[in-house]
Length: 454
Ligand code: TRP
Image (cartoon, rainbow, N blue to C red; front, side, top):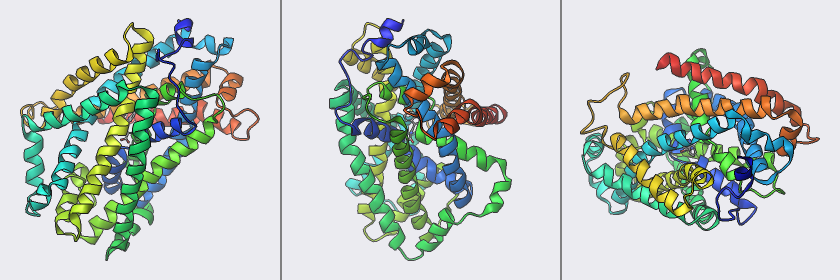
């Protein structure tokens, strides 16, 4: 086993083409539909400013330590032949973690691709103007009819999967790195423009106060803490071997903690800018910030119709969603593809095509879960929400916990700290305490919440 691990995991000599490659790809994987659609509605439902404070704390106490641990072990396994790392792949936990991460990737991508398809449909509608011609009160009905259609969502879902497969087939450098080099600056530009527009509107102050002025009374509600931790997990995409896989393509000379800080800063920036854009607009128009998942697909289009320049804003907003979705989908597909190339005789092209088709088929129930299959419900949730719930509340936290066990309790302090480039660094001791004790405890809380709410 250790021979296969230390051999090239992608079979194609894959490595990032530049120093920025790892950061580009991991920020691309982190910044997605979760930052725009999920962050805004979860923040809206959980009190805004106080939620933001808890979210940033969760990113620093849960996200950052796990990202450092994942990246360190991913790169060490790829480059290092020292006995300390050769022992690791033989641990049963490690194989279990890898298999779990492949299952999480398949599950998340199957429903994520459906939402990405909706965003693509809305982008086309914004570009050709049809979205803006719907009567401003008709957006709820339009969205409900669209997602219940037996054919349309499936077509858009297929289109997003096809684009993802196309990019992943082209490989780490020519596919993933190049796509992020184009899509990520576009994403940052779109969200920054929307945020600037948002703050210049009359009445923007209320939205900014909602997002930045904490109302500490909501801290009395446990669900706000849990929502913040769960959102940090999902938004950063930790616990799923993304950073293990991408860390494997990272050159030795790059610093793990510096890269990890850049990733969490980039991801948080996108979420905060999207929050500014969305809440200034929602408050300026006197609509409800606690609208829930429909905030992006119903509340905002409804406002865009009424705004001067609304069509440009709608194009920017849905382009932002589509670009974010695509960069995250690439990463979600790369995890099982890299695993197949490493452990099966398949090459990248075969693996990407076969997995792409498999994930598309797995996503069909989610795509049809609002129409043909709307009667299938589990604990009050439809199919898409159920898959999201199981993946985000069980599979990802479980993956995170396993990884922390391996790095914090099995690997040993010296090799782990060295692999994380924290040797002789003042941050080494706090990081090690976090990954051994504090982060796993917080993750256990997320898991327990999942069981209790299930
Ligand atoms: N982080 C992505 C987003 O915010 C979604 C996501 C969840 C993800 N888990 C992941 C992406 C794992 C890549 C890998 O939209």
